[in-house]
Image 1 (cartoon, one colour):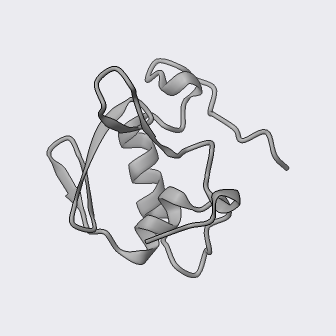
Image 2 (tube, rainbow, N blue to C red):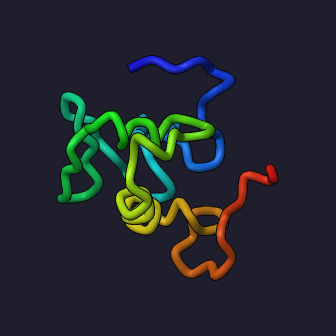
Length: 96
């Protein structure tokens, strides 16, 4: 799957940390197996909706379910400020 840089999500994106060369969403290391996303011991099927959520700045609501998105954001602490599981404030893109 490819995406134009201007359409990539910068708030909840996949990041590669230079120290350990590992990919992360939030504070959780992830792995990509084929089209699937692996977070810890759990492997999520790499559906078009999953990838739409993970990489698109404005995901198409007709392609994914919000329940799937919430599950990934909660599992990775990507929804929290600084990806800190103890933080009570949610992260925001700063856009309206």
